[in-house]
Image 1 (cartoon, rainbow, N blue to C red):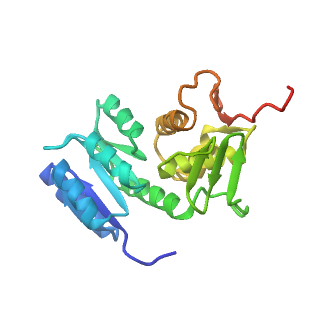
Image 2 (image 1 turned 180 degrees about the vertical axis):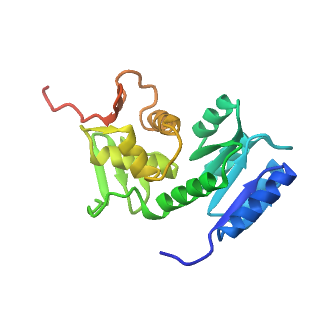
Image 3 (image 1 turned 60 degrees about the vertical axis):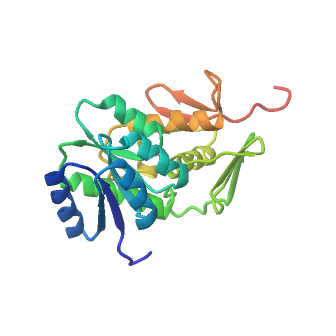
Length: 240
């Protein structure tokens, strides 16, 4: 556990909103830098190396979705989207290109801080399997995950996964053949104080499927169990 001050990059161009946000975050003990447009966001990200990014989608010079995509291509740092009501499509796309969570404006500062701390805690502490010893390598069929190296291979080829997808895959692999409810997955990966809906989980599962099982349809490695959750399928036994 580190005592260093955690840092947040706020990417937002609404002046009065930014000022209130910075004051509140600094009061909570975070070190804060602000980018007012998409180009500046990428420049500050490389310079500041924040622990978390709060990202508005409607930005001058470079759209928020492009900023999210660019950051995710080079880093697994947590990204929380700040989105106005009525932009659900953009929010889903944001999750698909790599954001970890989203908060809809207007929001209570207490809710935002809870989301930030939950995301940071999950990133620092892993998926939270209690007192169990986590195996270094988990393999099911052609999919293999190495926790110490943060590596995933499918049929021998490496697949790059952002942090949340990596944590989801680890949890599913460790419990292969068993159904994990949505509540269980959210609790283990986003934390017990997560206050969002299940859309975030569903989008991350969709994205994870596309990376480890491209082109799959009903025969996906990760099966949706309607009304319950998800299950990672065990490979068929030889001769079956």
